[in-house]
Image 1 (cartoon, rainbow, N blue to C red):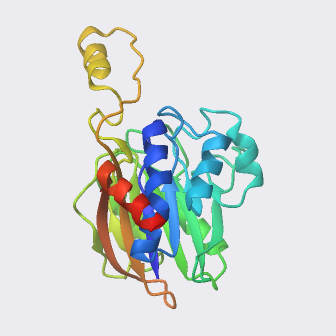
Image 2: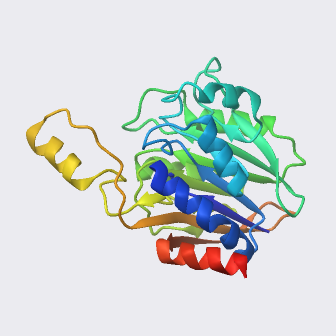
Image 3: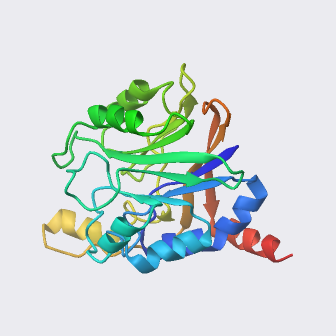
Length: 271
C-alpha cells in the first residue's frame, strides 16, 4: 500500500494547492492514505475548523499538528470531537486533543497516526521518546501500520527518534523546519525515515513568510508582521510504500508539486 505525507501546510496558498492537486495526485499515484501537517494552515499559524474540513474534503485522511496547535482556539472543538486529527502526544494530558488516532485507508487497512514534539530549541514538553513507547503500548497489536510525525527543530533529535522507533513503526517523518532534507531511507529495522519533509506553501519566501518583511524585521528589530508570501507555491511531501501485512516500510521518496503540475493534475482529473 502507499501513504502520502504532506509537510507543513502554510497559509491560504498551501491550502489551495493541496485542495487543487490532491485528488488527481491520489489517483495518479494510487495513494491509499493521506496524512498532512496542518499547524500553519491558517495565515501561517494555527488551523481553523473550516480549513480542517476543507483539507478532509480534498482527500486528507488525518491531520497532524505541532507547536502552533492552539493559535486558533475554535479548533479545540474539532480536536475534542473528531477522530482523524491529533495533538502532539507529549503535550500534557489536560491539553485538548487526542494523542493518537486510527484511520482506515482506501484499501481497508487500519493505520495508527501520532505526532510528537521535540525538545531541542522547542518549548518545554514531556519526553517524546518515553511518550512514543507509551503510545505504542496503547495501539492495538492488530494495527500493524503506524505513522509518527516528529515535529522538531534539530535533525539530531529527529534521527534519534527514527532509530528509537526503528522496527516498531512504519515511518518517522519530521516536520517543523519547513526545509526538506535529503536523508530519506529505510532504516535497518524496516522504518521509513526522513528528518524533514519540507513545507507546502509559497517557496519564494523565508519559511513561508514574505522575504521583505522578515529581512526588515531582522535588520531593524522593529515589530513587523510576518505576512504569508504568495510566490512559487509548491507541495512538499513524501510517498511511502508499505507492506500492509508486516507494517514495514518498503520505500520512501520525496515529492514536489508546483502550481503548473497542480493545474495538470486538475485537468487530468476532469478528463
